[in-house]
Length: 376
Image 1 (tube, helix red, strand yellow):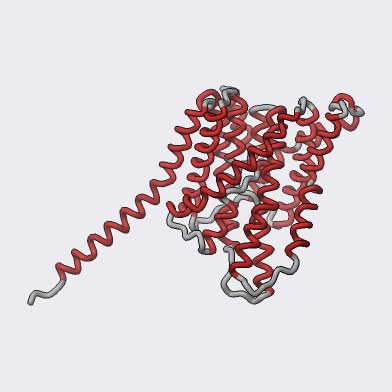
Image 2 (cartoon, rainbow, N blue to C red):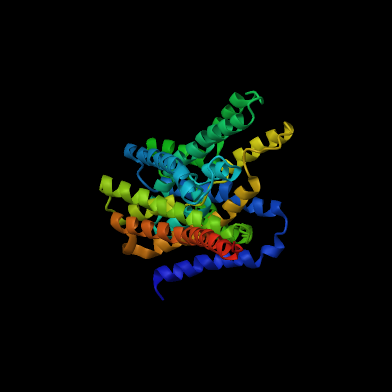
């Protein structure tokens, strides 16, 4: 059996295990406990080991900046994407999508596959890039959500905004992933690598990091539940988001002249990460404030946002697996541009079918009315 195919089947088996044991985890807190273990123990340990095993240079600081620029490009392109799919950007659903679609959650949807297919050095690059993404989802999107809330509730006042921003900055610094990145960079700066640490310490980090891939994939199987309601519209929108992301990455790689296969695959996989939970957390916070204000017209649609998050995770997982399994097939910017354009076309087919059906009904109805009109 082909090595890449065998590895993919092994990873999918972990997801299947999560689906099979779902009945044992009926309590939402139990599932969230697994997620917290991933984000606070397994993932930080994996990133620490990956960073301590590579030579971090000053030039690598470009990766957080590039990730942040990618987020911003996706954010400013999102209104146009919503217009194509007939979603009013000023509606509750439109405002919810404006925050969710440009965000990335590589920790749960991307990092396990990067380390399995590309290796630790590429994971280290992805971890650094995620710092820029964290700045975007924690700070930039919070400010956007706050402005939407203030526009929808002009009499609510601005109490607590500064405190909330300070709390977000503090949480950005205190987050385990960012703490291990800072620690690893400091240790590397003074010439200490993983082999220089006491044996029990380096072994402990390696063992904790080894839990990440199985835990993440089992969590996907446990947590992802997709309902039929609005499944096709959200799926096609996420497919279009993926196509748009690949086009942006392809253009950047083409302009910059990136030719290294692993770096190109890493860039595409990172850009295909599922939507982040952080913007949903911001929306939930302002939704609670609107409940306190007894505001009937809400700024965001939380149930719709949860559905987007639920569908986003399996869609991203399948797309990332497909890209990383492609090998040399998607290792050039031109191939990425073609693949992105194909995804965009595929995502637009259901929308075009709906528009054609609507147009046909509007054309047929007047003709039927004309035939049924009584003669003078």
